Image (cartoon, one colour):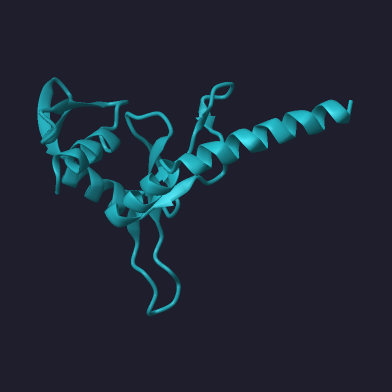
Amino acid sequence: MSFSYRFCWCLFFGFHHNYNFVKCKGIKTFSGDTWTSVSIQERLSQFLKESGGWERKTTSVPGIFLLKLPSSKTSTGRKEALAIEINPINPATSSPAKKRGIVIRSAAELEQITEILTDPKISELAEERRMMSSKNSLTNI
């Protein structure tokens, strides 16, 4: 795993509500009156075991969530797993803007989505869509 991926995983899974990083190798948690070190792998395993299907957990990065994918009901289907969800935060409500964001199941998917989002044509398309929307809203008044 490259440095940038290690950094991203540490950043994504540093549950900021109750945890602080210790050199990106583990997370320190406060239990009673003592600090204990819990690895990120242990936190992920705990979330996988204790959470319900489609449960969403916030991370230290706004708009990035940890998502538990339930196992499929067929005997040959996938096992329960964890995924990353990218879902912008609505500033008015401080909650996810959409019911479901972009779900990333692997590093390969993350690389593909990064390539797509960094393509200059997507910015051009978004700008054209914005200009078209503003023209349509002016003609409908």
